[in-house]
Amino acid sequence: MALCGVARQIGFLRPLFAQPAMRMPVRTFGDLKVPITTPVHHAQTLANPGFLSLTYPSSRMQVLKDFLENHGAKQYDFKSDNLHCSITGFAVSGKPVVELFCNEGYEEVHVQAANPTGETLIMGLLSDHRDYVAISRCQVTQPLTFPMTS
Image 1 (cartoon, rainbow, N blue to C red):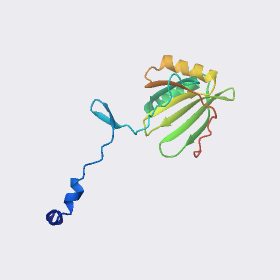
Image 2: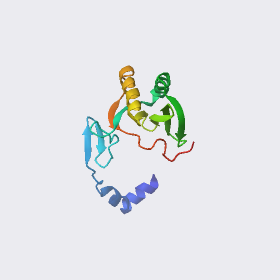
Image 3: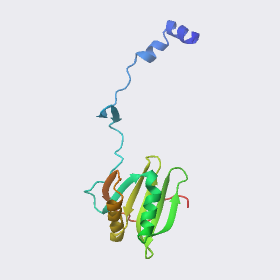
Image 4: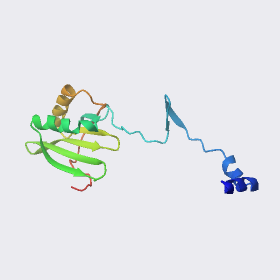
């Protein structure tokens, strides 16, 4: 405390506090201000090519797994980065159809199809579990090739 008082008297702190803070352009959503430089989190839209994709809260992960297993899909692989992301792959007749991408950092699960059978399963989710938070279109092109530990 005394050191700050001495520094103020000498004039060392004045240049530090006299400089205006750099202003960054922001988008405003009510009271929430988001810097313009922040990348858009949901880059997929309904105009994208591919199949139907849904996003659910991460707390619904087990319900989504149970739904897929009850409708004939079998979990064939699981990969994780051991921090907060994981991918669970489901297959029907040995062919990958759906991936669940769980991102605990954003507290969400993305359900993405690899083929029309996967999209049919996602349409069933759309009908039975309507608590999704986002809907878009995308396609799993290379199932479970994300470099993670198994």
